[in-house]
Image (tube, rainbow, N blue to C red):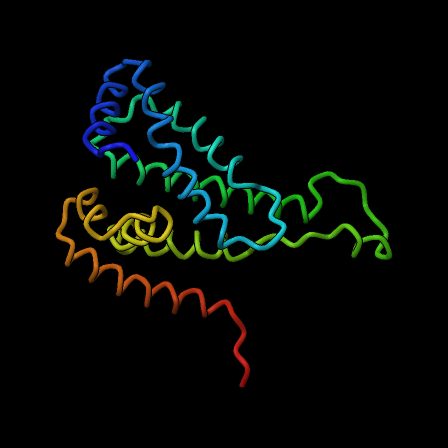
Length: 192
């Protein structure tokens, strides 16, 4: 794994317009991006059509378009990467829901429908909706969840990105998890 300082230096050079810095950076962060993508994909339903490598490649393409970002450090880069991967998965899940509802596809008889039906993963969309709702009332707690859960950052790395103390991160983490659990359980029918 590359030293955080080396990654930070390359990020700063890249944001200053040195395209060669991106070429040097990607091999250094590839394994960490793979780990992030694997973490994301582990929460998906079995047989998900989007694979870890495709998620990393799509994130890479979007990162290249982020050339105007003023990178702070390695943790900031992985925070942005985690956010991009979350967005890719949510967009994918939403598009699958759109495709499930028709999207211009010819009607199919009910006898043939069970053979080709693949349900979408509503959990990704529900979690995204809940995180967006949390962000509306407490943006920092939403960022803590995104960075720690989706980004796999430690409390210290999250604190560095958000410029708060690790204790604040841990407190926000705890409260945000409780809030999200309550929000997500509202959509789940309970047995009486």
